[in-house]
Image (cartoon, rainbow, N blue to C red):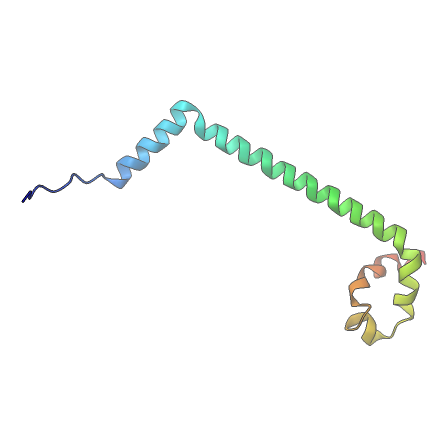
Length: 94
């Protein structure tokens, strides 16, 4: 029976070694740069989607919002028209 224990690796030494390898090879910068580019693309896509939604609401306001404004308070806040609350932004234009 072998009574020798396996050598233990110090977690701090392992962490330092990984950081040094990432820094020395440039892999860390590549990963961070890729993440930053991806985050920028997501933000740009969100702005584009918001712009499309706002344009669609502006186009639909003249058709949908008169019914929303004619509805009762209950229907506007809790009923079938509650999803058209964005019409409040167009109240002065209709």
